[in-house]
Amino acid sequence: MEEKKKQELKLPPLEGAESGKVVTRFAPNPNSVLHLGSSRAAILSYEYAKMYKGKFILRFEDTDPRLKRSDLKFYRYIEEDLEWLGIKWDEEHYQSERLPIYYDYVEKAIKIGAVYITECNREKFKEHIMMQKPCPDRDLPVEVQLKRWEKMLSGGYKEGEAVVRVKTDLSHPNPAVRDWPALRIIDTEKYSHPIVGNKYKVWPLYNWASAIDDHLMGITHIFRGQEHFVNMVRQRYLYEAFGWKYPHAVHYGRLMIEGKPLSKSEIEKGIKMGVYSGYDDIRLATLKALKRRGIVPEAIKQLILAMGINTNDAVISLENLYAINRKIIDPIANRYFAVFKPYVVIVLKNIEIPKVIQLYKHPNRKNEIRTLRLEKAEIIVEKSDHEKNVGKEVRFMGLGNFILEKDYATFTDNDLARAKDFPHLHWLPSDTRTKINVLKDDGNEIEGIAEDGLKLELNNVVQLERKFFCRIESVIDNTIKAVYTSK
RNA sequence: GCUCCGGUGGUGUAGCCCGGUCAAGCAUGACGGCCUUUCGAGCCGUAGAUCGCGGGUUCAAAUCCCGCCCGGAGCACCA
Image 1: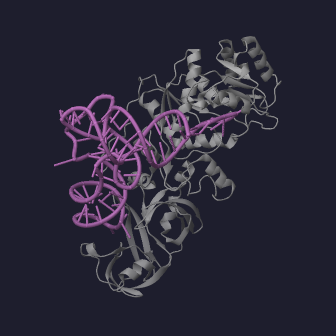
Image 2: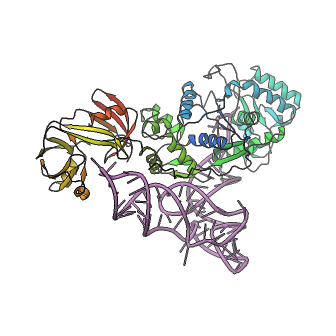
Image 3: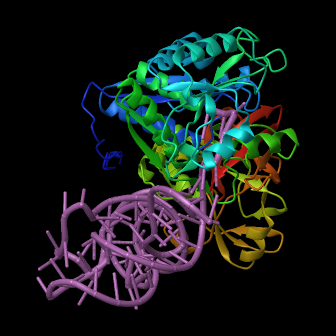
């Protein structure tokens, strides 16, 4: 039964990759949690590193204390999410602790004329750049640049008064590439950094910190969304100036999920405004929400690997994730009965009481048994099941075959072969005490009763027979709370 | 507007670089059957794509060229 016939999902070969020499990194800004989209870079980077027996680095890009502020809790959340995915990293870095390194390269770059410090303000600079003209201080001698650099470091400029820029090509067709900004001043008295506080006033921008780090850390392959495409174009000028070799970069397309917000800002906003209950709100596609719903990490990994490194945009259907997930959990998830409201009480006729009914916990594992006790000749079934089948002969699963009437049912026999074409209905003894609430994926809750044995499945994904898979989230006294996984 | 990147069945993906074996493969979803103490899983089968549109090159185009349309991304002293 457990034949391993599933073709191991294989990533296509990586350009320029050699076994033992691949180094990849995942470089999140710790300003939110991981979701299905952001886990893509992590999974691809990690899997490729593993595939080529290389190295995988986790690097927190926390160099904006002002607009995209990092938060201490997210460093930890991201680590948790990665661990949950089964991702292990060989190195971990915080860019906020590497500022002296970035400073060092500014000085080096000034000396080779690769960067300059401009006192042009944003508007003035933009005017020049749009006309493919340099700001006057672009060609100031090295000594002046160094002096300005010292002035920046020593606090001689206030926010916005000076910016380090990388010389590119002023006639580059894309204005966004022309002399891009590398470091700026941030008033950390006002915008304190969660890790280094107000220790530094000069902060690198993404392209500077990322470019320097990718080189210093020996990154050979970069995986990121297409929104970073021009950043590669920009950073190449710097690499060229330093005589470095730019890593192979893969820019995959945009990933969307039917109806679910997949942007950090939208998630953060929704949580702040109380639209979502938290990072694990089941309507979200965060890793924390998926975990809570009983989606296993292996399913997420397989989904991402199946998408590969395609550059076109994808609107993926959650059904796909569910299908993959189901294949993994179905062989292990135990089976239970739960009857949801509205339900009806049926009196059983022609049976002996009391009665102990034995059922398999899983159809494939006939050695594991669960039991239901009938003390009274009375069961509860769902109203819709009852309505559809009044007047018919039905199979009460595990109990036997019955002619179902309006409020009673008469036992006929226990012949399973004969029951083949009968509707199979699940049921519970009328004196069942265990209650269950299931949080559905649309945010609504449904109530019902369940087998007592279900209380022992805390944190597990189970199948409520004929209903759906769900994860048992909490068990307090006689009440079980579960979260819907999928059909 | 400018600069990039895309457009293969409902969804995802393979093929496109190096034209024919592709009247397009796989997965998922839908439908039907078998099996089964579940409406799940498994097995079998069915339906579903004139490969965005138009033109060109060629004996031959999803694959090459041109034009157009549509979608996305970027155009921050964000990452």
